[in-house]
Amino acid sequence: MAEKNKAVKQQSEQAFVRTTDAPLLPPPATEAGITGWLWHNVFASMADYSSVGAMIRSLSVAALSVFLLYFGFTQIYTLLDFSLFSAVWSDPDGIKREACWTVDQGGSLPSGWHGACWPFIYAKHKFIMYGPYPSEELWRVNLSVLIGLIGLGYVLIEKMPWRREVGAGMLTLYPLVAFILLTGGNSATPFGSIGLWLIIGLAVISVGRLAKQGYLGANMGEFHALIGLTGWVFVIYNAVRGVGAVDFGLEPVDTRDWGGLLITLVVAVTGIVASLPLGIVLALGRRSEMPVARLICTIFIEFWRGVPLITVLFMASVMLPLFLPEGVNFDNLLRALIGVMLFSAAYMAEVIRGGLQAIDKGQYEGAQAMGLSYWQSMRLIILPQALTHVIPGIVNTFIGLFKDTTLVSIVGIFDLLGAGQSAIADAAWSSPVQAVTMYLYIAVIFFVFCFGMSRYSIYMENKLSKSRRH
Image (cartoon, rainbow, N blue to C red; front, top):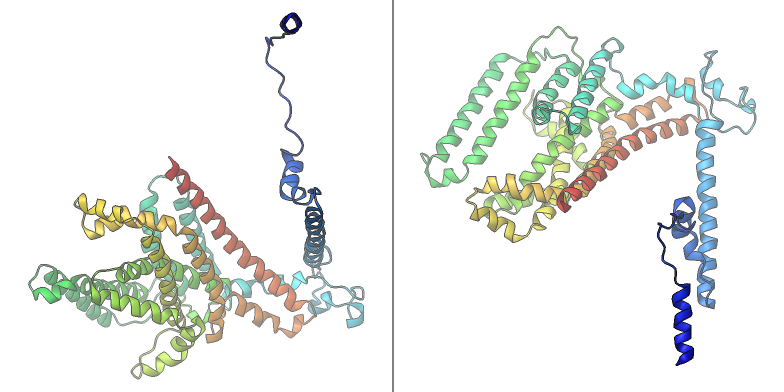
């Protein structure tokens, strides 16, 4: 007992109470910085040698990591070597294909040389970007693209005022301005025909309103929205035709003279902008309690999802004119745009329907309890939540649509890929690296657009997830 008391007394005499804060020490090397990242993501999985099985697993992971590292490094170096280090960047003498020929082929490059021939891209740059669009009218394309980029950037910046109004203008006025700039207007469409169709459209809208008010019976009243929508389609379409028929003093440029990246952007933007609202309508229609609307939307979606896009484009370009009256024809690009729009709308509808099904039933009941109508509850409560849930699916559909624009080349429309393939056929630039350089350039353009959409999608997801947390 005495010894125990003595030990306690010694401990109390040796006790130390810190009166100042301990110095801050850096975290261990395995927990922070590049070394910490490497430890947690690479080396931690190959550092367990506590048993025979763990040792075999660690060595296997180490061997696989070394192989993948070597494979990735060699592939990246090969790509950089072809596109940058060994590439030919200029053709000062104007010798074209001979600038990218080796000694064995009659040129000046060393035997066995393999690199990109960028002078070929410089020479074909205008054709790749604009197709056969007249060179003296390229300012119209550049101006329409510039207006679109400024408007898009303005809408995407959250701190800018009047974003909603600018966005509405980008969806309504900008397509009309771009259409006039690109085509030049003066389409020689008779104004009498346009006026007649406008009157018919207004009459259909009036019928829809009469049906809504119950003057045409209960059966017609159920379809007042569809009747009114049909009338507005007539009015808007013929209003665009009327504006396109006005002579603005611009040189008319037929859509057959469009090509390259211009066609790719026109097809992609039209399909993206039109497929989203149409997909929302189709998704709501498929979940509607009205049997006719649900049946029509279901048949539409299943039909377009069951047909390949290449078949849709072929039918729109080749078969559709056979069913039209003699003398009636549509622009080939317009037919392709309609086909792409309807095809992508069917896929978009299923993506949005997935978001609608993820909404809890209580949200619908809450909207009804507040006395909201169907469209008010959809616009204010259901759709904002549903669209937030399916942002990755929507952007994935947009990216797929952007890449599917290359299929329009099979119906004689020279998009970016079609223009590139036509440029490859130029014998004046014939060389072993001609095609590889062109495809690499096209791949980079597609990657920039698709990666940009993907990053913006991730930004929106993070932003909305933060707002939900708060």
